[in-house]
Amino acid sequence: MRNYHIVLFFIASLFGCEQKAESTSEQIEANIVQTLKVGDDAKAIENYLNSQNIPFTYDKYTNRLQGIIRDEDSSFHAITISIVLDNQQRYVNVEVNDSYTSL
Image 1 (cartoon, helix red, strand yellow):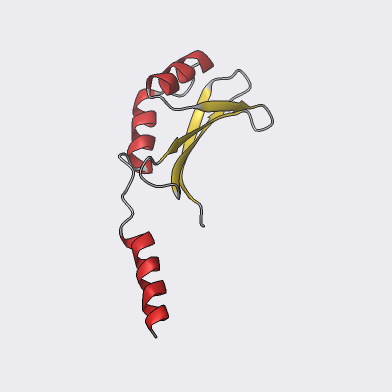
Image 2 (cartoon, rainbow, N blue to C red):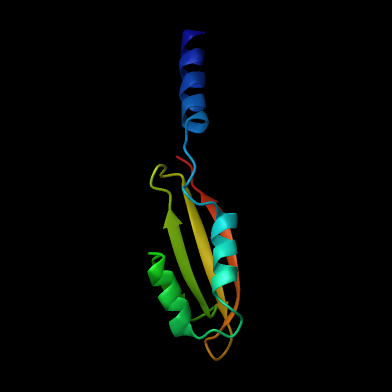
């Protein structure tokens, strides 16, 4: 029974004490939508991502710029950003999601 309580305490500590990221995925998406406009060129998008210190790569197969914001307080959480481009490398829309990993 004592071992059960120890395991239960450990699990509660992992999930109950985890701090949230400074910005939520909703806040980040709102900021991107407010800043970037449909038709903005790749340079404007890259300038925005660099100004926000968001590391990113270009995926030529999906024609997207993909960025990630890692939670400094938790190795379990990150926010992923996928900026969809058209054939002329111009902004179409953005997808922002929370990403979680387990032990």
